[in-house]
Image 1 (cartoon, one colour):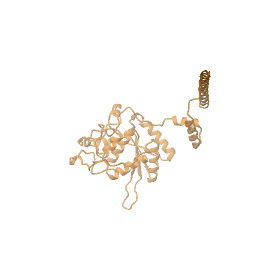
Image 2: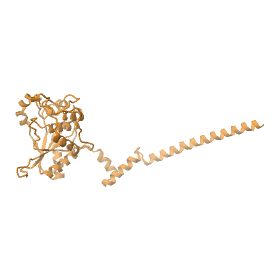
Image 3: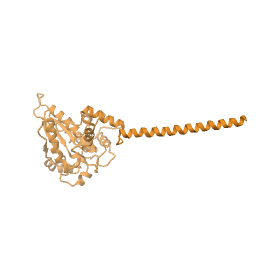
Image 4: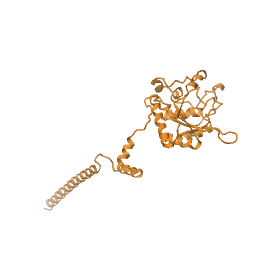
Length: 314
């Protein structure tokens, strides 16, 4: 009798446990459905609460509604860069600026110096953070018979698909003053879209006039200089520079040092030049927020020019 009572008690206990478990499972499923139901009622388009809060926070700081912020983020800029083309890697641009060989063929040229000295390296690193390059005069270096700093910076802008912004500061006179104004130059050739250069030029002039109240933006014609120096360039081993009327294949496949610049310039004071350079750099998203000072790689030794047995990359 005791055994039969014990068995009945165990059977009743197991049955109660099963009922309790089934009730908890059903209750959990019901609560889960209710929770997701309310979730999709609050956010019908599947937008997460964090995204919604962030949009309203940005809108509150800007004094706009969330819809205006979303529409503004979707609007495209007035410029774009060619994507389906050959471009160097940023790492290779840094390597040849130290005189080291690039991994991708065509990044540098023996007839086009890219190696930077200590002062040029400092200006190069500052330009990556500020969004525009500052040089004195034409940045010409007589030892290399060229401007390695401009060559390396233009190569970097081509790798990133950004226009090159350079402030050419006039050299002081004997009394310490300045006789002529500085010149800010914007080169659109790294975008590699010659059919859109004119449109970007006009819109950039309009933006500068509206924001900075500065007239200018004169087109720099370099065709005569290219024609006069073509023989010298070929004799130095560098391939001739093409003209703006070249086919799209040239802008897709050629390195930037074989393509002509498309430059605009403004004559400005020193303060205006820095303000304009910063503004144009931000317009084209040139500054690198995470750029750090360059560190000299191991095993790098002073380079030699081609006339002294080197490769002409220093």
